[in-house]
Length: 447
Ligand code: PLP
Image 1 (tube, rainbow, N blue to C red):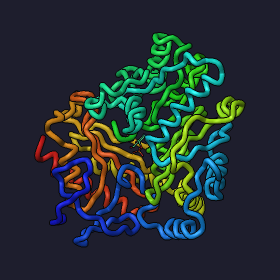
Image 2 (cartoon, helix red, strand yellow; image 1 turned 180 degrees about the horizontal axis):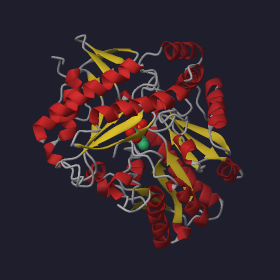
Image 3 (cartoon, rainbow, N blue to C red; image 1 turned 60 degrees about the vertical axis):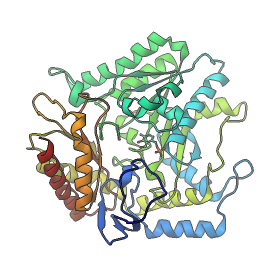
């Protein structure tokens, strides 16, 4: 802790935050020399750990060559190379990449891109976006309008005037029927999109937004098998653009560069951020398929822009992140060691009567805590279990990402883990061990 009076304000004005002064691999060091194992990369950001020497060098080199050239006049080498790499790695048909500075900006841009595509195609009546309950798409007004997290929206509800409708999440742990297969549940969950499209009038619907694997709101919730294939079918049937928000789950976090590669679907738009710059620079991107871009290119201009889009240093850092991932075989590592990580979580928490679900993919894992395993009854929000786990974990030197759902009773507190791809087996063990201590201590306070 610091004894200074801070003029910086973050989320919680009452908390005195430790002063982070250094980063070394998976560790963050504070001004008092305390070390914190960063098991969540903040919020799934730092996929290569902190101060990765190759990324630091790429940033230095680019800063000495060209830091910025406005995109109204120029493109740049790192932006071109990064876009080419992402397009090559993306599912079939993706041809263009629009760089922004983060996840909310990426989703705002995607929302506008979808709108403009429909207008260029002569379907300007398509104004509705549909997204899911239990989702988070960012904190700017457009992205917050999309999000289905009542707690984050509540204060700003009167400002969220966009034409957005919400449908059911795909959340097997709580919604799959006792006698229903995962596949049947996936199709049933997807059908709530079809119902909503029909209710709004298919001719009025622009796009559907979903996180491929849900992150902050519910904690590493993977889709049921076949869910997104059914979503694709529905979107195609009604001319609705399918946007996958991979801001948190993309860029290798689940073991493939794009999480949707594991779903056997090709969306129309993908948004990414967080792991793209690996925390070394602020960068996000919107990837678009050819038919969309073609519709806009006939008229020439995507009506959007920010000063810092395509920032040369940010693109250079992100480009080097991609090279490191390739050179060090990190997708394979996340995919394989992710399974070991899951087994370790299973052996630490599988018998715990207050851990209802252990889930996720690759290095994107979560546990969901419940008061009663049989009924899946969550602890009351006012018990503050997630906050207690976070505080205990920090005190033990572990950064994890607990959350407490969207509304009382809807789902339990969860803890999200998103360790750097470079974490060793021993470091993964330490994460599980520290978390087990924090969870046990916090449960002792509330259970
Ligand atoms: N989309 C998802 C799925 C996210 O998890 C987040 C951030 O947590 C965002 C969008 C917003 O990104 P940013 O905080 O970079 O604006």
